[in-house]
Image 1 (cartoon, rainbow, N blue to C red):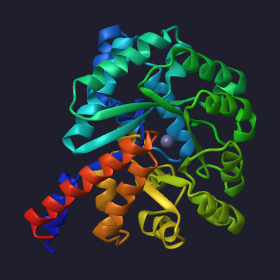
Image 2 (cartoon, rainbow, N blue to C red):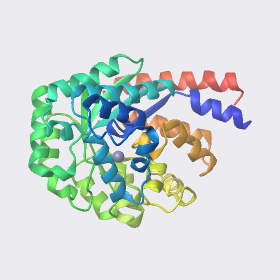
Image 3 (cartoon, rainbow, N blue to C red):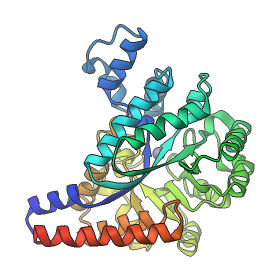
Length: 341
Ligand SMILES: [Zn+2]
């Protein structure tokens, strides 16, 4: 197989993205426009002046940069514009279905209204030809009570665009076990359940996420530190949303070559690739697939299977998932034929 053929295949093949943070798509050029629009931080004039925000020494440094950048968004127009940039990028990569993580709580706490925030993301989604659903990141740092309030609000609003909840932010400071009631409420509201775990903290954190009843885990790579946790993941068929570039940039793993993705797959754990915070980590879903192929030596068939597993784990009704899986398989077969792969 020619290298160019594989590149073309990875660029054009239909994809599913389950782990991408809307706010993580905030590019320096967009941030500058936002700062100008509000007349804030006039010391930043060129994208290069913001380069420091996009280089991280560790997970804590990344979270500081993320917090600084995201709190510059001051109204729903800003949120809409960042969503628009992300959705255009997803569409250009032939992502056919995405569940976008949205930390709406950050903006609600700045005084923006839930309905307006969700409507802004929905409007940005309508402008592109791919289906986008929202998974609300409850943000651990804001504590369990606020998380419960968020779920109650989501249940009351009953927006069709919101299909699930996630739990990101400060993993060591706010363990998953604090959020049992929020997850119970979300389960009762028929929302899909996922949580970040096993990124900044080890297998115990994955265990706590499993106790919340999650169907998917963001990262989860440190599950390998416990045989019993691995067994539970296998038994339940829990999918891990694995984001290799993110893990390297936040120093959760020392380098791409030593990333545990291959080991997770070898153990039979279901995995989907994600870009996490594409602008902050200089990546996207296509690049993550390219890295998995080039650096971790995964075959195209394995990459295809991860996309199928992502679709199977989407927070959509089973009949819709099945239909979409078949459409993706047909498109892929046509593309392989065309490219001679
Ligand atoms: Zn994440």
